Amino acid sequence: MEAITSLYKGIRAVAPAAQGACTWTTPTGHHRPAPGVCKAVMKAIVKYHTPGDVAAFGMESADPTS
Image (cartoon, rainbow, N blue to C red; front, side, top):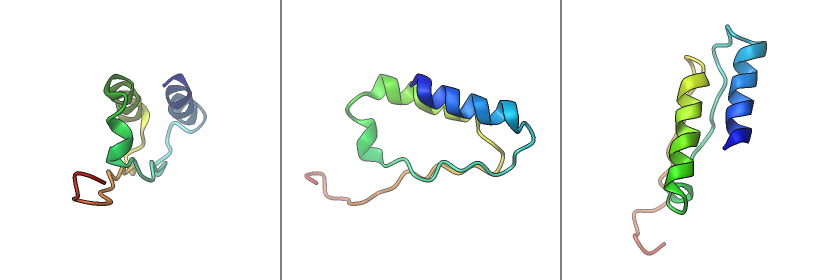
């Protein structure tokens, strides 16, 4: 979690007017094992992201067993 916070905070520090940092994808399956950590990471991204940032929550399958 600290690495993500440091990354996003660092981007804002060196490029405060940046308009297009991109969180390319955040697959939903990766959020289930550690919801507390994932929530903290998402809060850091929201706090430091750029106006043009998009975090796509990919849906690879609608099959609940996959």
